[in-house]
Length: 244
Image 1 (spheres, one colour):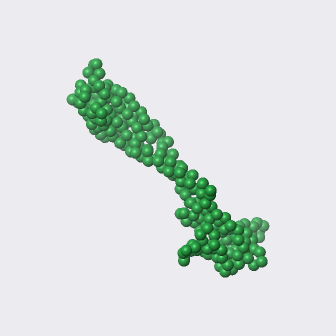
Image 2 (cartoon, rainbow, N blue to C red):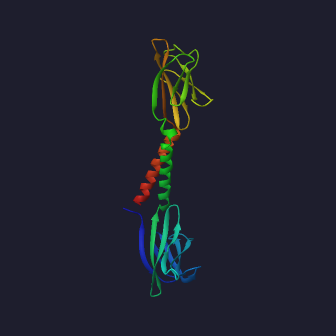
């Protein structure tokens, strides 16, 4: 069941009608002249049913003598929750024929589409999508470095052969100069969140050669999750507006 409302009426100057919770009153029927057209239309005042202030709109029929064309100009009152529109349909016995319509959440149609576009674009950005849910198990000796998912992972000196103990791993971008130290222990992974990505490291076991087996993984960070959430929210808003 939709929430849109349409009604056709014939009103003379000073006459009004209640529609969609608003009172629509024709203030005057006037002739106006433009730079290359003539028009005849109606000034319509829209006031909430239980309010005292409203907005005046203008709707008309325009005639372009040189081009031989006739167009209809719609009057509208746009708001965040609904759009109110009046369309001139001609005149009959001193009254103007109007098509009144109320379109709820019309602005949110564009908001929802924009949210979907932004969220989907961010989620599909190669820098983001390329680093989702990638994992590897490597063997590291103290001071040794492994490269994974565009980052260097270096086991701190003195942290080898520590099965069951904690470790310290320095993580830095493969082409960057800064680094972050992550501390991890069995049952508790060390992590570094870089907005789009979250990098995790966890000790597993001591390998037969004495090296420490370490699990490295890269997952979706909070900003990526926010982008996906933004897309979903936009889809909900869009569906809500289309239903209405």
